[in-house]
Every structure is written in structure tokens, then in C-alpha cells.
Image (cartoon, rainbow, N blue to C red; front, side, top):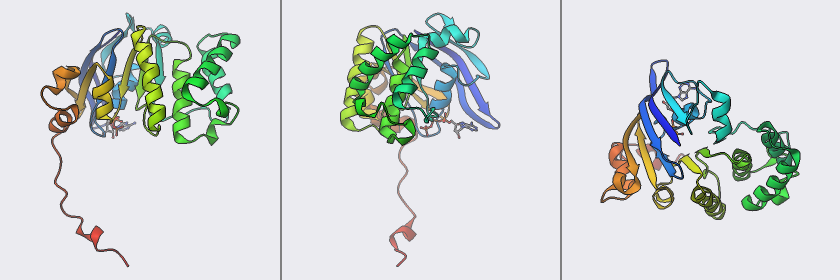
Length: 250
Ligand SMILES: Nc1ncnc2c1ncn2[C@@H]1O[C@H](COP(=O)(O)OP(=O)(O)OP(=O)(O)O)[C@@H](O)[C@H]1O
């Protein structure tokens, strides 16, 4: 479903993504993990056609994302990192915009909007401005917008950030049913337990490079995914110094 080959991106002197290759099969629930600043968002932005790579190739369902962007984007649903939404729209208007932009009829959008609102538990918020939503509600409406055109591939950048545990479980349930039906999910997250429990495959990215990729069991071996992650990310730093923090200013 997704083939990424030799992807690189520099920001001035900073090498954000360094020769990343990934293969994601159809129906996979694929996690991307890495420390802050590892290059996850940069990688996902290039995969979804939002950020032009310096080098490399991305093919989604047989379509090259950067030579045939319109066809490729038809296949992809995206939850971007910084949610820059049209937040002076109500939730319903926002989903109408997202659906009709993707070529759906107004009738189809209405039907799917009410299904999505129930699934995400935001029925009561549909007529309120997105600008007035809480962080978790904003994430949910953005997720709903990513799904409304029933894409084959969902690329979700930290979908569970700010989402409460019950809602997160609901979202996971929705995504698991989606992958069981042949949809493919690629998501980034810092939730190691969740990735280990929910994903079938994972890539660990550190300083722009893929240090491990494969099925969860292949990557973690005898350890937990978190232990393997900490090992590859260079271990924990001892909490020394900062004594001033315990000297209290009053
Ligand atoms: N627009 C930009 N201009 C300059 N540097 C950038 C830009 N976007 C990202 N970077 C740098 O590229 C590197 C990778 O950033 P990226 O946002 O891809 O990391 P990430 O793995 O998603 O991190 P996090 O887990 O904190 O979200 C970082 O060093 C970051 O400072």
C-alpha cells in the first residue's frame, strides 16, 4: 500500500530525514515511533504530499505521490501534525468542506457526518465553531475529516495526543475495524504501550534514520517495545544537576 524509498530532507544544516525507506502492506496498522525531533512529522508530511522531499520516492497504492499528486491524494486521508483547520466553521460545516473537497455529494457528506459524529462522540458539538472546541475535540473533528472520503490509507500524526482514554479506545476500535476491512493505517505516537498492543508493525526512527522496522515482535525481540525504543534512542539520561529547582524561591 505504501512504499517509501530513500527519503531525505534537510532544513538548512539540519538533516531531519536521512535515507528513510519503509514498506507498509495493505491492511497493516503501522506505528512510527521516535524521540522528539527524530523526523517523524517530516517523514509523514512528505508521504502525504505536504512537504517536498530533497530525495526519495513515495508510492501509494501504485501511484507516485510527487509525480501524480492529485491521484495519490485521493487515496490518502491525513491527520496533519499542527492542526491548522478552518476553525471559523462549525464542525458540520468543516466536515462538509472536507467531504465536498474530496468530491462527495452533499447528501453523502450529511450521512457520513452523522455517522462520524456518533463514532467520535461529538454529536452535540457539530453546530459549534471549531475554534471553540477543546484540544481533544479538535483532534476528533480533524480525524473525522481525514476519514470522510473513505481513503485506502490513513496517515495520522499523533492521533491520540490530547484525546481522553475512553475516546482513544473508541478511535482505536474504529481504526481496527477499518484495517480489518482492508484499510491501512500509518500513525506516529509516543504511546509505546498502545503501539505494542494495537499495531502489527513498527518503525523506530532516531535522528532521521530508521534504526529498526518490522513486525512488533521482530523489533522488540525479548524486550518490551518501550525498552527497545529507549535502547535505540540512546538510553535515559541520569537526572543530575538542577538542584536550584529544589531550593524554592520563597
Ligand atoms: N520547518 C522547519 N524548519 C526547520 N527545521 C525544522 C522544520 N520542521 C522540522 N524541523 C527540524 O527537523 C527535525 C525533525 O523534526 P520533526 O518535526 O520531523 O520531528 P518529530 O519526530 O515529528 O518530533 P516530535 O516527536 O517532537 O513531534 C527537528 O530537528 C526539527 O527541529
